[in-house]
Structure formats: C-alpha cells, structure tokens
Image (cartoon, rainbow, N blue to C red; front, side):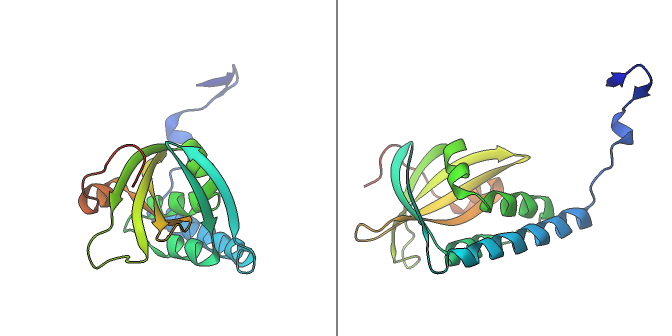
Length: 162
C-alpha cells in the first residue's frame, strides 16, 4: 500500500495487538461503560426501535453492568463487546434481527422471551434482548459470541414474538 512515492506501508510494519493489549482495552472500556451506567441510575434510557420487530426498550444501570460483567475467555471479544455496550441503540439500529425463543424452564422467570440481534464488528456478536413479562419493556441482557450463541440458544422462531 502506497501513501506516496517516498513512503511504503507494509503489513509487517503495522503494530500487532497482543492478548494483554486487548485485556487492557476491555478493562478501560468496561470502566467507561460503568461510568455511563451511573447516569442511568436515576433516569433510565427509554426509546422505541423497529428492526425486524418493534420494541419499547429500557436500559438501566443494572443492564449495562450485567453486560460488561459477562466476560468470555477471548479478550478481543470482551473489548469489542464492551465498546458495543456503550451504545445499545446504535447496536440495535445496525444489527440484523435473528429471531426469538422462549425462556428455559426455571431460568429468567421475570422474562417472557428473548430476541436476538446479530452484528459483526471485528468478530460476530449477538445481542440478547429480553422481553419482560406483563407488557414490560425489552431490556438488553447480554452480548455473546458465536460459540455461546450456537451452544446455548435453542431453535429460534422467526417473525414477531408471541
């Protein structure tokens, strides 16, 4: 790749990030999300979005704290997940609706079902949004990797949930 005739940039001259670099970045981004979450303590974020389905969404301090606290073994994924957690509305706007599934028996009994949204930014990420029972809002629950999605999420149903 040439910027001009005097300077050549090669792939070997670009600094490669190490596992520790991604770990440090994920910690830095986690701290930023937690500071952002403090602002939601008294005033949760509410918005409506249509992307495959129409959702009335509520994001609270607890929701963001839960997302950044669920870490995988992959520090690169954790850094990307924490960066995406900083702007859940943008994630939902730029993602693809995958479908929904009912809750697993004995788990998440306050939820009616989960809806899943897919976005690729360096790695594939899937945002799990849970629909609260009794007409409650949708709330972000987790940003998971492809492996967790394929191994923990049963058959998705397409279209509008229940």
